[in-house]
View (tube, rainbow, N blue to C red):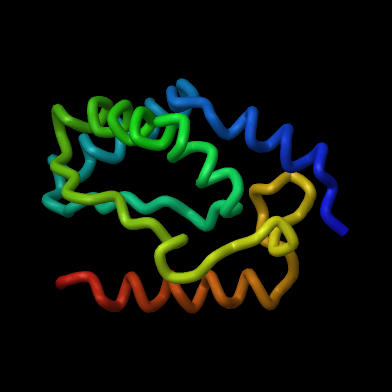
Amino acid sequence: MVDPNALNEAISEGLRTVPAPINTAALRQLCLLSEQHGFRVNLVWPPLVAEIEAAMVASGALAQLEGNIRSIVADHCHVDEIFDFNRIRTYTVANFHRDMVHLFGEGWEQRYVSDLRKYLNDLPE
């Protein structure tokens, strides 16, 4: 059963456009490692509830978050596009736990794992 309060709360929390300090530090460190060891960094958006994604796009929050991420990694990483797993399939509120972050049950988790495996296999060597 979908809890509209949980969705509204997730939408208001999901409109943040500045990554948490720990995420910023992790991105910078990952980019430094890629520079030192010669690997490429690809960024992806994980599955997101369609209503939250729509609110983020409409408000400009998603574009602003992407811009902030790009500025964090700009010194040491080149990022072409950020792949969006919501382009593969639509995820509804019912596909997530009440936190609107974690996929609900093995069926949806397995679909995402399958999509992720295909994405990784399709990356150039």
